[in-house]
Image (cartoon, rainbow over all chains, first blue to last red; front, side, top):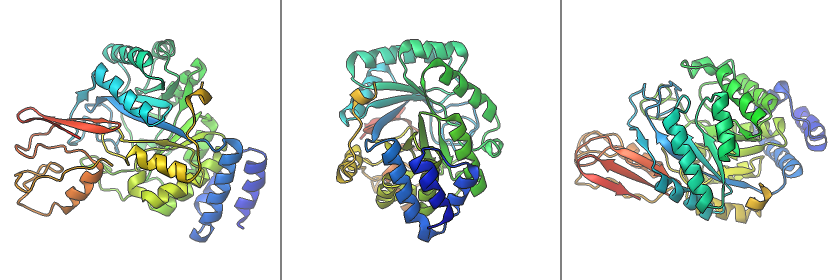
Length: 331
Length: 69
């Protein structure tokens, strides 16, 4: 057993204290033959500190495309020659999407907009949409609208948005290579305001943007410092027309190493499978991740791309004897 | 992934990359379509307005109307 896993067994599994950056790096550098042991330990940590339940979520894009920011991985930036066109979702179809999500047993429905930050029109659309969902659908509503002002944070709380997603995307040292139209620190400031408001903080990122293994460890440590309620873990799905459109997909074993390492850095967080897992891990790898630290999934489609059918993921959870977290457990 | 119909053999344009179906190899486009909605109208090559939903998608061409899955 590698020394880092022995140490993690005591520090993380028994005492609930996450690995630091150096510890995460050691896990990320484990040879392939030690990967099963790392995943097994991460699974034990997840079961000990989070339990067997899996939180299921659906997401939908309220405002697609035409974003003024230049996040190099994103097909929704208006600055790249992506085929994605700008489109708004109306309230009836937003409610229908929430119903589709609730029908899977999901407890979370996240409304996402491709913007730098919300303007008055978007806030009005969101307010009406959240009210309509709350009137018709039994589900928790989360939002992801970019960078916020304090007034907007307060407004979201008043609407009843219970969780806010704002990904840091990558570590602080690599962020300028991925985004130049705003800073990592600006994102951090929004996350600070969200946390102080009482909303749950959802913050993760994307692996495979060209960051080094050391920077992957740096990112895990920075997320652990933030201590978010949820960490969505994406794997780059290279989008045509974006600056990262020719990047290779993350290797499956590297993705699994990262899952184990992020779990060992954050033993109590909700660690969610998000975009890209279909390409990077496939069906077998998806199962391995759920047995290696993951305890939440986005089911169904993503914002501009398609996912596995929700029924496939729900069957997998059933096969693994992992119960879907009930809505009553989230209130 | 949603079960999708591939671009019809007779369609002049690839609904994934927007180039002519009769020119070049579109095997990668067909593979990508398993996890992506169409982006181009296969009849006129216009970029479509695409809305992805948790359990489906719709794509509207200003000239040829809406398709969905």
